[in-house]
Amino acid sequence: MFHNAVLLQESIEGLITDPDGIYVDATFGGGGHSREIMKHLNKGKLIAFDQDDDTKKNVINDNRFMLINANYRYLKNFIRYHDAMPVTGILADLGISSHQIDIPEKGFSIRYDAVLDMRMDERQSLTATNVVNDYEEDELYSILKNYGEIRNAGKLTQAIIRKRKETSITTTGQLVALAKPLAPGHLANKYLSRVFQAIRIEVNQELDNLKIFLEQCKEVIGKNGRLVIIAYHSLEDRLVKNFFKSGNFEGTIEKDFFGNTMLPFKQISRKPIIPGEKEMEENPRSRSAKLRIAEKI
Ligand SMILES: C[S@@+](CC[C@H](N)C(=O)[O-])C[C@H]1O[C@@H](n2cnc3c(N)ncnc32)[C@H](O)[C@@H]1O
Image 1: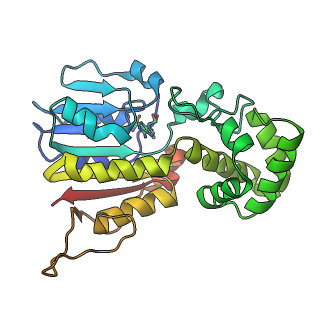
Image 2 (image 1 turned 45 degrees about the vertical axis):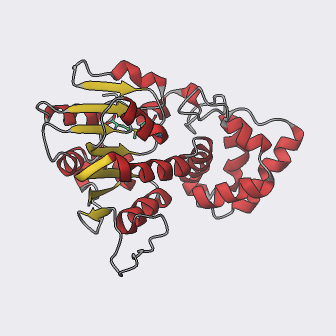
């Protein structure tokens, strides 16, 4: 299968409140979630987004379905353009798909020696080669420390700076070779995956895009409509958690002049839903997944 859809039943149950509604799958990928949404629709419609051109080949042949090959940061513009405001529910299954990891030329994987690229959307200009070779030392350090939670981010940054003074770092193999000696012996793959994850988050501006998208969801989802997000990274999940709780990314609950709280969403459950043991065993990618569901007030 193209992609093993994570928390499939739980997310679709949380999303669909009306079989005749208009829904958005913001991260179409292999279409696992989209196909399941379609099964629950009657006269409803599904508008899917994916910034990766490759996902076009998974398009669902049904006149209630439409795929937009664009970044979900433009959600509101496209939904307005297609006269679909307000929608009944939005789902986002964040990050990259296992399919993208498995394509060597995309440069997401520590397993292949390929061009250091890591763009989900090949139309954008910033690549992992730019981040690794052109970013200032303090920017690189903060990406590795914050996005990758790399303990010895300082040492790794130094190793990158030393290497790039000798020669440009343009392949995943070069990055693996310079990072590996700094990894704890028995956890080398985990360490390298985190290094790659950190750079990928920067290349694709994943946290900024998520914030822009969530802000737009306040306007795009109609009353009592649902917002369903599956996150795989603690920083992403924190943004989602705070946003659901308070309507902002800091998690501070604001009150109006009369002392009434001004919340755009109500959390359906306070705790995130995580996959059961069986799913984690069958699909290792699901291990870090956290699903949160909120309802528009
Ligand atoms: C985890 S996969 C989704 C898998 C999908 N739910 C399925 O069942 O096959 C994430 C997908 O979202 C896309 N994506 C990530 N960030 C995006 C963004 N900002 N805008 C549009 N698509 C994005 C990726 O290209 C990838 O195909």
